[in-house]
Image (tube, rainbow, N blue to C red):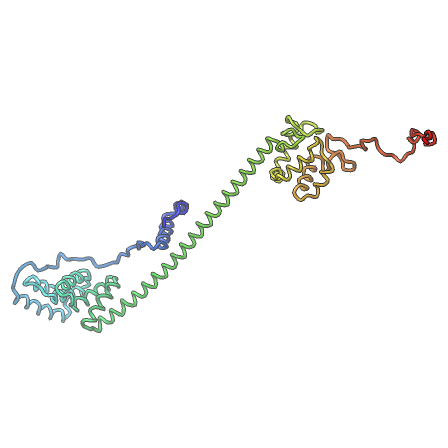
Length: 366
């Protein structure tokens, strides 16, 4: 499974250490091996140059003599002199695995741990089951801090030839390994917690970026809709000439020069949104179908949940809260009042009764 590009982009914005942490975590999730930093162990430098090795010679008697002298010196605690005798014994005749292990023991006691490991390696090449070589190498590795290797060698030597001192060394390195393993687990848990925190921060940043993008797209659409509506008026609503008043169109009866007011209306996001509603546009077109507002339809639409709020806001912007021309409702600028009945009125006065013919004056039709 490949890592998504947006995740890689987000990781790329982090520091080098954080990038490695996140990438290691991703590799862990994928089941891929993660490179662990190699811990360097301090050790005594090797000095193999002053350790002579066998080249030729078959003087076994002399070699035996040197080995006996070396053993006595080692027993007396003179490890430096014992080392010199072991060197002479090794160069006199082909050395056995035991002779190499004995020289390694002298080197170990002189704290030349790397050299001791080297001689033990040579001894184990000759005899892989040399308990002494395994034991000396295990002790030397313990002093070098290589506890896992030390534990293996000491455990193997104990299976071949049990030794009390080696048992104590084995116990020590085993406890050390437990401490190291516990520390590794602790660090791993800390790293996982750190990685989870980083992953949560990345998810949060991605979510914020997504929301910002959506808001920007919505704002762009609103601006586009407002611009389209402002350029074309109310979309060809009858009576408005397909444009804003004062700009080549206009509502009949309304004075020119109201483009600023219409711009104010069309800059209102709620009005712009309402003008995108087919129901609202159909209602406005229906009211203006005769060229002038149909007050009957207008009053009927005032209770409509979609159209009513738009009419109220429109009347508020155009006429201070009332449609002009209706008695008792103020007046829409430029429309005057509706006045009385177009039929001249219906008064209660009897002054016009004289114009009606008297029934008595009608001829008898019988």
